[in-house]
Image 1: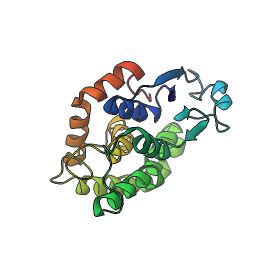
Image 2: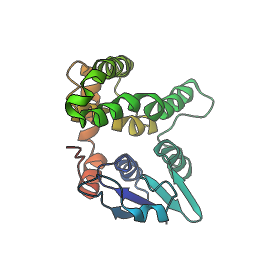
Image 3: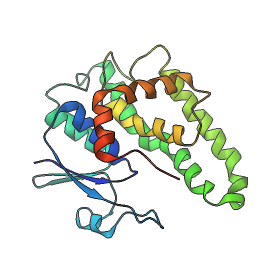
Image 4: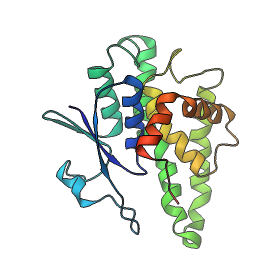
Length: 207
């Protein structure tokens, strides 16, 4: 059976959402961050050398990296749902969003998270970080203008993968200037499968 190795307050939450959307049978093994360091427990290194989450195991297959996990689950368990037809124009856009989420959009958000913990020492870095946040969140907001989903007329892996970008922007109080992104996130939160994933995996907490 497919197993999700779930770490609290991590990107594995969106994988849990995907599994709930598909109705795929799965097992979830929970791991808890250290309350002081916020680091993942060493037990995760027994699953994957990086010791991070998300990670899935499916028989003899172990996959880290949320974009690769989302792609794998949809291809193997989606039964043709939640992705455009390969070779179509929508598929190329879909594939770009899968990579853009972690390849570009998350960098300024993670920098904001870590630099904020430096308090006054990190103040000189914030103008550049804020500029990059505005650049990326503005791009995402524009892409969602007049659209219910990132690609096509129904939920796809692009929405799943981009959800953590929206969640982090919300945590940092950065959504107000981006009404399309904020409205999209609200719609995603209203989905029954998303709500089930929150009940099972727990809400994000980054304080």
